[in-house]
Amino acid sequence: MTATGHAIIGTVIAVKIGNPALAVPIAIASHIAADAFPHWDEGTNGEKKSKERVIKEAVFDVLLGFVISYLIIFVLFPQTNLLYVFLIILVAQSLDWITAPYYFFGIKSFKIFYNFQKMFDNRMDKPWGIINQVAILALIVILAKIF
Image 1 (cartoon, one colour):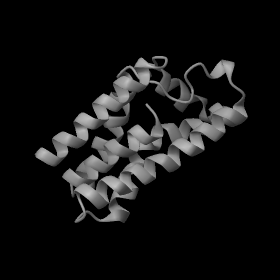
Image 2 (spheres, one colour):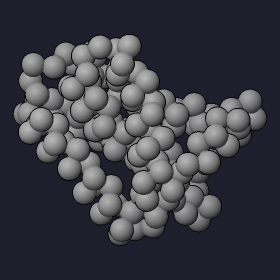
Image 3 (cartoon, helix red, strand yellow):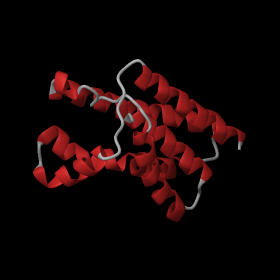
Image 4 (cartoon, one colour):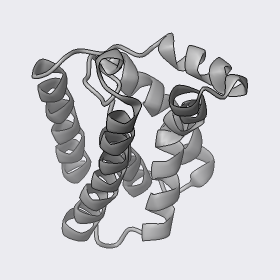
């Protein structure tokens, strides 16, 4: 899943679970569950892209995720602490952050994290990989607002 997707899920977790002792493990588990869902991300067909392109797309994705998460908080859940949301977003994205040194720079000591993540990563090419992702994220935000 994109960093934006993990950020939105992390935002909903922060909104709904005020106790970090619960939110942190749920955010980590959400990463695994989200990546198991068929999705597109910058690494899909990454062997056909330059590393520079993947890095640029990933940076844009991370920034977009924070912007959308802020808008969700500002519009739908304004009472939520922004620092807490930011921290839970980072936790929800953490498995991608710890694979980045291997994926982008070939740092071998991080390969174990990359291999772990590949066990449950279920990529799907565009357009359906994006459509699936947007649909599930919209549903998660709607359910968070209703309940």
